[in-house]
Image 1 (cartoon, rainbow, N blue to C red):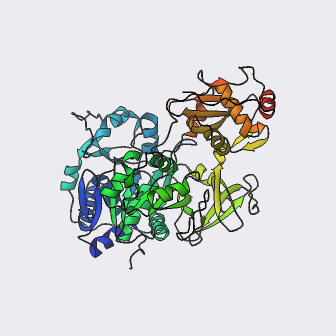
Image 2: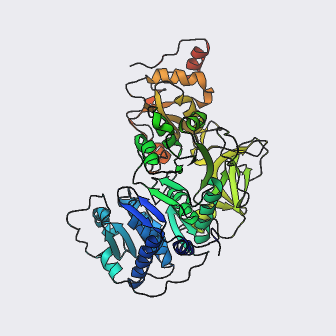
Image 3: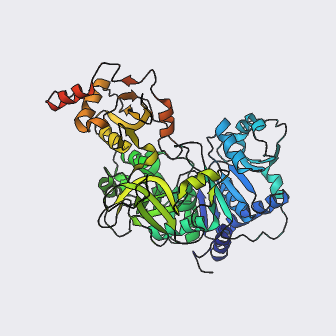
Length: 555
C-alpha cells in the first residue's frame, strides 16, 4: 500500500510509524513532542487496554477531553480497537451532555478528570454509561477529590493501560464508523454525524491535495479535537502526509504570529472570525517573519482577503463543506484570490448542484439556491445521524444530500456561499438573507459585530427582522440612528424592526454565531422595537431618501 492510499485510520497510523518511526509526529505546546513510533505505541496500548476492559468492535466510546497527547491516543486507540470514537464538546453540560452521550449508546467514556464533576451531576441521566476511564490532562485544573459516583465505575487510565494484553487488534473495514462528530447545534439539537473510515481518510487526502501537504510541513492547529476541521483536515491530514502537527489548546489572536513563528509552522487553519481577529491585531514587523504560506479557511473574509494575504505573506485557501459531506469546493491552489468565492467543485469526490429549495429543480448559473451534493466514491459521506434516522431521511431527498446552504455558481464555475437556508428570513413573502443585513450593519463605523435573525411576527409563517449588534470599544449609537443608517443602505423590506446591542454574540467553540440561541431569545426587555417607539418605516425611509442627516457614532 502506498502513502495516502489507506482507507482506515489504523492502517494509516501503523504505516506512518513503520515508515517514519523517529520523525516527530505531534508537538503539543506546553506538553512536549512525540514521534510516529511513540504515538502508535501509546495508541496501540490504549486500544488493547480498551479491549481488555470489554470494548468490542463497533462499540461507541465517548471521548471528552481537551487538546493533549492523551486525547490523540484515545481517538486513535479507539479506532485501533475497532470501535467508534465519539468526540463531544468539552463545554457540554446537563442536557447537552446527556443528549450526546445517550444518543450514541456508549457504555465506556474516556474523560479528562476536570470533567468528572459535570459527569457526576448527570449520572442519573446517563443510563447506558457504565465506566469512565479518567486521566489528568496537562495544564488542566483537575478536582482535588474525585466525585463519588454511585453507579458508574471510574477507573484511572493507568490501570486500563496496565491491563493491556498482547492480543491482536481487530481488522477494521473502510465502511466501519471511525468517528461521530456532533454538529454545532446552531440550528437545533446536536446531531451525531457517523463518519466511516473511508470518509475521514478521504477528508485527509482532500486536505493533502488542496494544501499540497507533504512530510516537510508543520501544521499549526488550535481547533478542538471534537471538531472535524482540526481533527481530520489538520491533525490527521498532516499525519497521513508524514508531517509534524503543532497542537495548541486554545486560540489567541494576539499570539498567532508568535506561535507559528516560534514553532516553525508552514500551514495553518482558521475560520473567518478568527482570521478577522488576527487581522485586527496591531501591525508588527513580525507579521511576515514566519514560514506559513497556506492558511486553510472557511470563509476567507472578502473584505480583508487581499490585505490579509499581503500583510502576512500567505495564501488563503478558502473551502466550502460540512462534516456530513467533507469538502465540496476548494480554491484551486494556483488561482488568484476571488474574494467571496469558496472555489471550484471537488469533482474527484462529489457532484454538486444548485437547486430550488422547494422543488429540487436545478437552477441556472448565477441564481442562488440550495447546494445539494452526492458522492463519487464509496463511504466518503456520512453514514447517517446516529440515533436520528428521521433526520438522515430528511437530509437525503431525490438521491441528493441537501446541505441547507444557499449558494450559486458564476459563469466560470466558481462557487459563492450566500447563507444558511435555516438562517434565511421570510418576511411578507420575501426571502431575505441574514448575511446582507449583517454586512450592511457591519458597515456602520460604530459596529464591531452583527447577527440578523428572524423572530416570530403576528402572522403565521412570517418573520420580523431583529439585528443583534456588538459596538466597538468606547463607541455607541442610538437605535434610532442605527435604524436610519440601515434604512439608507438596505431595501425597505430588509430593514429590521428590532435592534439589540449586546456585549458579545453567543458563539460555538469554533466561533460560529449561535443563531438558534438568538432566535430563541426573541424580543427581550433590552430589545429596542421600532413600532413601540412610534416610528413608521415608510416615514424613516422617506426621511433618509429626502436627504435627512444620518447620525454617526459618538464617543
